[in-house]
Length: 257
Image 1 (tube, rainbow, N blue to C red):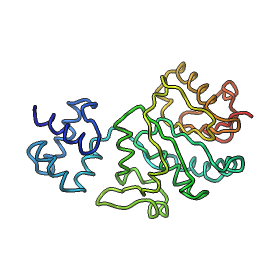
Image 2: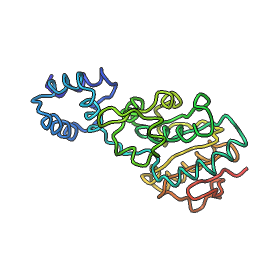
Image 3: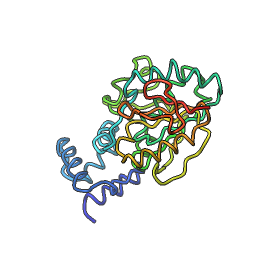
Image 4: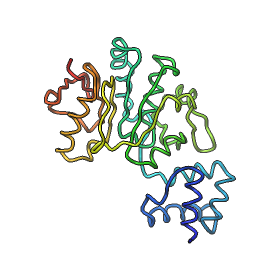
């Protein structure tokens, strides 16, 4: 077994992240440049160092991440969610059923929880977060993020919900506990129903028109009447009525009662 393969096994035991699911040449190149820059001569040497040095471990996690996401992405839309959408939903139901679909490395569902915490106690919050990528889910569960992911986070929320560890930030355990992560394939797996809010942002742009058409119908069916579907800033639905939606605000669609 070569140096890199042994490293892959060690990392999987330590973190649950399976590097063998990534393209080997790209990942080796990315990680080799990191360990050489830090003065190590092999993957085994590097692994011993990340076992002993938390800051280096966080740097390794950041370097291997391929999913790109951030907290409060397109911050103005999250403001609309907080000030306009959620208060209306909470008038109808105080125990909201919420789904963050294709959640990547967790920034989106954690943002949801932080915003909801202004309106309800954290102990009452529950968000389902799903993604097709096992490794993205494992990263999300670790809850450790580089500073660039927090650029849009309001300063008071950063102080309240993050602990700085070297160059990285760890999210509050109570926020983590409010999110349940599961693997889910949007195109193949069934959807649960009676959601008050579904957030699926910056994902549908990667699908064909036919797939998008099918997914809009599935998301509509998954919402309870009056429920809200929140999409990304390049994903406006131009014919919402054909899916049983009406426009509530820009990038927010309400299932018609």
